[in-house]
Amino acid sequence: MANPPPDRRAEEDRRQENDRRQPARKTASPESSSIRVGIDKIDDLINMVGELVITQSMLGQLGGDFDMSRVERLNDGLAELERNTRELQESVMRIRMLPISFAFNRFPRMVHDLSAKLDKKIELTMSGEQTELDKTVMEKIGDPLVHLVRNSIDHGIETPEARKAAGKPETGVVNLNAYHQGGNIIIEINDDGAGLNYEKILAKAIERGLVGANEELPEEKVYELLFEPGFSTADVVSDVSGRGVGMDVVKRNIMALGGGVDVKSVPGEGSTFTIRLPLTLAILDGQLVRVGDNTYIIPLVSIVESLLVDQKNVNEIAGKAEVYQLRSDYLPIIRLYDIFGVEPDRRSLDDGLLVVVEGDGKKGGLLVDELLGQQQVVIKSLETNFRRVEGLSGATILGDGTVALIVDVAGVVRLSREDGRCPNDQVVAA
Image (cartoon, rainbow, N blue to C red):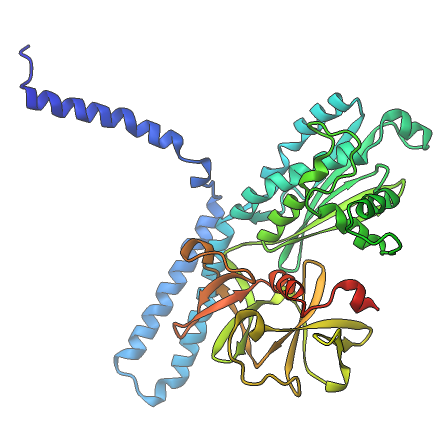
């Protein structure tokens, strides 16, 4: 066979080179680019689209020769469209949901290896593995979970000899549990070990200057110190011990997902780390509020209540920080217009509106001009489309086409504390 002409041979070489590169590009793409979906979820989605097409057809016929006698049918059609849209949205969101067993599956092998390495007897139990979670949240919660489980194995569970001396079974138990609660998923990492050493943590905090020498703190405040940057009570640092150095990263990663982490411990009986996460990062139920000419959205899961300011319950601390007495609590008053630099309708607290919120275990009262209503919103990332803005977790587009910013409650409380307008816990408690 005669050799092909040079130009054709060059073209074939280029084609072969492209063929060789194509598989390489596919291999390099992350596994997260695909997702397995049950056929039942696809069937639900197809049914919802069918309902939507029928409703659209009905509304199209109404619009053909519309007159006022058809207003009632139009309202019925719009209500049906709203219901179909909501069901379609829920069906699409269910496609993104995966059982948390995908995140839990790594732990049996890890616990087995660590127990052998540390010469401990440890049994891992898991429950709620079929609890579903958004795929994006699942991917980002893996590393914090690993860290907390390793922490329970190393710091929590005692050696067989120590457990036997304490009247416990030689085999310690670490339990992973997941369940839904409201609009959140709760993940618990529980162990039946020695529990957290209150005195040791407090002594380390005093040594580092985080707490005053004669200062007394409740247990939950002392346990929160574990999440301070660089804080560790480990005597020996190894690839397992001393992992408290990264507990601040664990908390920061969980907070970045819009969640929080709490610690409870009983000396001699064990500890429980509770992670609270939103089911999805794409959609949230929000309360629309107005401050001046700007509209903000506060996640409903962060709102405790809303109230009119009663001036006799307002107190000033150190001439700058303001607190509001709500029953037995003292809430720092956070003026959103100060945080975001906007001009409000009023600066006086008289007859002002306070939205009582809780974020990262701390409460505060956000001063707003008006409550506008509640609705589900689709979250758009500010960091992806603009840049990271402290105190804001994202943005959304409202029905009238305007952009509303979504308030990061924990971030706003943190900003207010740094500004000095929000008193610290000790001052408020006093």
